[in-house]
Image (cartoon, rainbow, N blue to C red):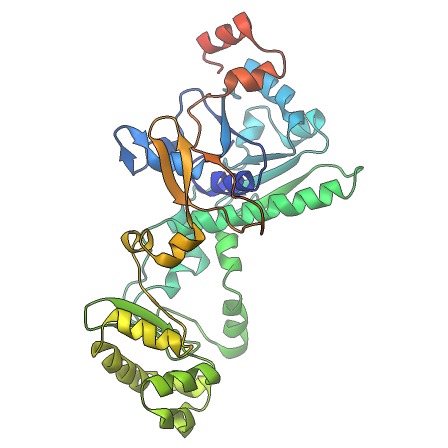
Length: 385
């Protein structure tokens, strides 16, 4: 019972690996993801791919009848995922004690922007806010310029990944102990992003460093930057350890640089990064991106052309790996989407279906607890489902 992207994405990752996931919505289908762009010919494409592999149940749990139906359904499931502001479910009569009474082994994963405690517990949260407050955005942009958000809600996806990890870990715990009682998981999206930034607190305390934006360069290793080729493409290159740096120097036809006292360590290469970047930029400017990448890869220097989705769909490696899969859709036939990650070796990729219509599986799911026929129609007429 979660909306938009973050928590639903986490549940989708579980569905990718075979979990039965039911997407619970209010009967009016008011989840904002149903109108978030891109919308094509009246179809919300983001919804279809982000909620793939799920069944759809519409139920107004705020009503007395809806709440009773929900609590009757609950014991069929291992995990409840919700992303409302703290206290919302309590107001609806679905506090933790009520949930655990209905299902003593239930795991309740609660995702919010800032957690169930603290002065910001009730503040609204969106991906860009998580990114900004966590320190993530402060690392993006040009030195001395404005911090930058990327054109995608990466904060939601990071929080969703932690959601799936939390669920998987909880299931290992519960299934290893048949007597274990259910419990709550408090997942703050801002903390999920901050968790990725391991060295920031320790370098701040021990070194007095406040890491900030550095453009496409890395302030912790060098050379590591993006370079423009003669045909106008951009290539990302990293050659930070000494063995890789020596190979790069061979490609640049400057083997002497590998032994230069000013470039002998990572710290020295960072310190003298401007001179290094000028040399590498000149090399790239004299050849096409394809030629540069081929030469570097053959020499064992990590690099990659910056690709748009138009490039990705034609990339031989992505094609060979079937990194774009097809998901069945009742409206548009089939849709492309990223593959299941990670893969189980020797096991065929699962056949996936797009996100469900509002209440698409009401008859099936409610029928399992004896709600059918005239009762089902009455609930529909009353707006409970």
